[in-house]
Length: 594
Image 1 (cartoon, helix red, strand yellow):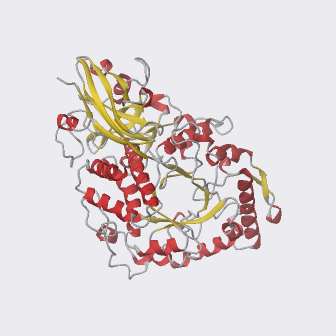
Image 2: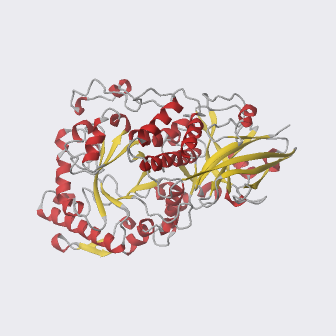
Image 3: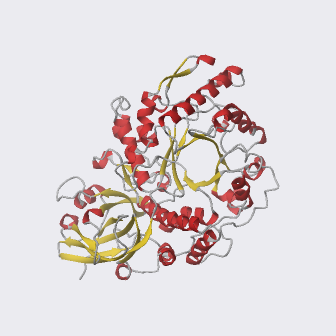
């Protein structure tokens, strides 16, 4: 009798009972699920994932070992070293144990990251099952066709052999993502939230901070995401390593020293930070500039000639330096994140709600226009995060603001806005947050697919490093403010460990990027065809991406109340659908792409 089960990547399992935690799953038991999970399909240059669920015997997890056998076709092989194994860590959420954090397993029989050691540290009450997440990378250079491999699971009662039947497609996922999956965070949150950094006052000088931060950027990159780190606080304060050193005032203000700034950000902007990843040395596609109400000019001088001179002069220096360094593949964002409710500045630069704050857009565009309007060299863009006033602003400011990041619910009320912004040469992202751990994994797949169906350029998860001091028990906000966790305190890793939700996001990004690649090869009807494939798999009515307008749009945004949004139209695209829906979509997509 088998002691282990190979199951697909869209269902989680209770460690106490072995019951499926995804309530809408078609399968009822592990045995049923295992019967239909060993046949896999993947594009080249992509990851394919599955899970191993092991029933614990008297010896517990100490007797469990895993070994991968290289998948082979008649003419090619995917090396066994392309498998990566992660122990699933369980969190207490809403009275149940849910797996989310993924701890990379040591290869040996002893060490801090064996399944036995991790299970002992996790301390799951009455644990009867352990789970391991498996990633298999399919290299770009292997031939298409059918491959056969296996994973052996050794337990105290014997060895289970799980055959893997993998169909490798001709299609390859592009190295450079065609959709931006933006993981937003804020100035030096890592130092506040990682034990190994907050206890080190010399973290910038000794390189510890830069190495740790790069590990987070690399993990985001490898998961087809961008870690997007706003460098200033609401007060305008900026940690020293996030800006170059300035000197002088007024016309004499200039950058004194670029060295620390270049050491910090240069590897992201030339791609060298990612040189040995699967995707390669691709520079980050976007980066926040440190310019804000209070830097480089002191806000006490706002409205004066001196303020204008300092702000515009240092921006010119940034543009010149970035151009000279050859940082030409990244778009640098002028973004004003200040909110007057914090009582530090009198205007909302972010998510403008009141008409009297609109002037900020005009004022700061005018301050920066000499750089924003340059056609040569490094690329600088004016960005806004829009919600309340989006319906009033997308036409008014389309010629000034070139990167629009829009609340996903409010964006869905204005399908006509996309054509207006596209006509003005703008890019459009939507924003929301990571899904809570207790939500079905299918919910995590929606943002990339909605981006394809609607034809937007990307999406943002707000805040992704706020895991909380008790993340190993229950993460803050049920994990909706973290898609990775710190590896230092429990596992001796100077960097992050991923979550299951981050893996699902990456796997769906691979699907979305394949769709976008196909759409660009047939621009006339490609997006419509891909939208149809998504709608068919999810059993959606035509136009489900655009649920209609609420009845309060005739009121000015400052009269809207939060309670109105619960009754306003929402594009609820995954509710009630089985977790296997994403796998249904993949099968139909692979049949189209081949």
